[in-house]
Image (cartoon, rainbow, N blue to C red; front, side, top):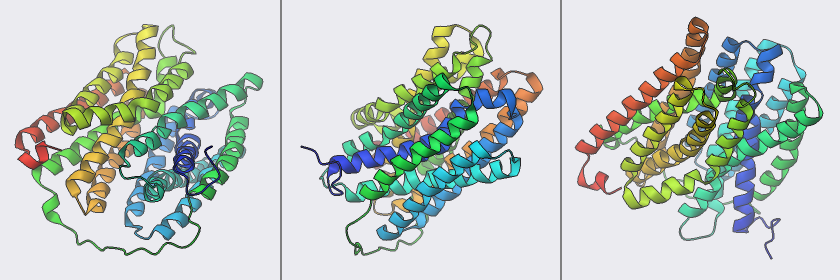
Length: 395
């Protein structure tokens, strides 16, 4: 019998990790995309929505960089708890405030909380798991990103079946987040303070070989590729002729496709090499991005949600796993550089997207630009493959 209230049970640790992602990434981030169409109808402008998305990623980026600097596991537990509370409070604010400035602050705070939940929470899960090979378990843990979209989307759908009120939905989500967070905070802590030898690493410039620099720039392009659909996908689908109302269903498919994607892509990378599989995943993502710009076919546009959900979660895992292997005993610096590059892509993309939507009254141009940027990342990875050392090629 699994004891899901035992802090030291691997099953409880993985479940608590997935739930923390549902709260930190689902409630505090992705459900904003679910609720975007009704909010655009009677509150937000598309420009302000883009700005809110961008500053949310500024908060996430600052939190991710801060997370790489926390060495002590007991301090990680403290900031994980703070992050979970910030995720819930910043969500509640959206349901009860009409003030644009307060909304902006809450999105920055939510971004920082999300980073604590995902980046720091994942580190705690990794530390607590008692097994020799943690790769598979962490693959299950990161399936929480897909679950975070799917579960929060189901909650909003259930709420809207009773009441057409997006403000009420934010309040309900924050209440759900509160109860879910209690479990994660209880399990992802230690019975007593953990004594750890903190190893201080010098900044090692030799890590940044031409291969690694190209990898970092390619991850920036993937940050761009991730964010346009992450912010606007339901509205993109709803704006296509004949597809009004299909946006939320497409978003549900994104979550469902995201759940197994991490495990599938990581298994393929183990077999065929990380860079090869990253290139394939990015090319699949480009197809998904372009579908909505090229056709109003309902099935193809629903499939674009599957392609998006099926690639973006896996790509984060693939890049971070590759970075971790390249860095060896000094992962913090390289992980920080990769996360920063990805974060800059996330901050920039919503801003050019809303500008292009303003000019052309359509998402198509934004999707073309995004697909082009991701394709440049693919070209960089082909170049990286050709200049890789024998050691880098085997990873």
